[in-house]
Image (cartoon, rainbow, N blue to C red):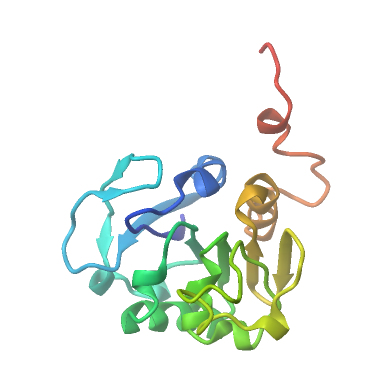
Length: 188
């Protein structure tokens, strides 16, 4: 079974990746990790507690096919050299990287935004993030796919999920509106 790697950290925006994770769990095994060196409950922005599967020192990026980086407040993670190495490995090996909302700041900290067009729910003037964002490569779009990197604004989580799932091969190109269940209310 293919392997998905999900970054978790206090304040991560669980809702931005929940539909994506719901739809891949039959095709990919989801492995969450923390940048900390011990397993402890991580509290999402909604207050849910998540117990990561792995600590950062247990992550071998060779074992994974896709890296998912949710938004939230990732500022405390930007100087983490081990996290930067994981992101750089995925990029160099042309493995899929999916980052939403504030998640692209982590890509910037790893130097990836120097090489790809991207979008984010971050202002390039924000003092927490301005040093890692690359204004010349930031595109005013809700979803940007460049090379092996998919980025999205946070409120665009359904289209983000669909793009990532299509790139992962979970949804084929001929499948029209695969997330209709989440977009259109039904009685069944």
